[in-house]
Length: 275
Image (cartoon, rainbow, N blue to C red; front, side):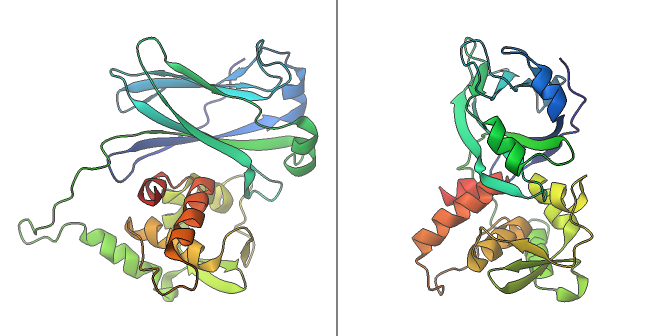
């Protein structure tokens, strides 16, 4: 059973990675009509010389009955490691880290399909994630490139490399141009919707999607500490980490929490930096 094209958000991330994120809206009653082994299939998509298709099994597969599953079929010109993950949006349109998972697998000529099982049980889905008879699932994949390639460090033709990153980092601190407000652990943090939406599919869903929170004066963030949320925004704006040595929490602990935040908001480049 085919799905409508989910209009993937695609971008070439830092550190040589190429990523795509798909947002699916499901009608609960229609998903319940499917039997074990039947799936909703996306169209075949192309990205950077690869083609792939996503299959969602609401009732599980024949070998994994009654276990909600998702699988990915990838055709690539060469063996490659792929990071795949999913996350459900709750009734308020917010990502729920407890309803998510991510893993990696290596493609080959004999292994081009990978699946993730036990995504969610139906009672939990209905209680926390179904709104107006529908629920939303985000699925992302990242083709991991050479994360050790070095960036240029000298000016070329008088242009300083990555100066745009510095300019965007400065934009984060410019309150005059911000248009979204977050409340994180009692602190108020301002940002720019377009920047967040361009860099994170989760933020795009929250700020511009069907379940957008654009009418809210302040968006509450409950699962992330202020220093971690600020560090994530810093990376979103600049592709770099801020100095966190002056925080009360040890840097190692902050990095661990930052990795979880990056996973929750699908900021793949930040996850690589945190490893």
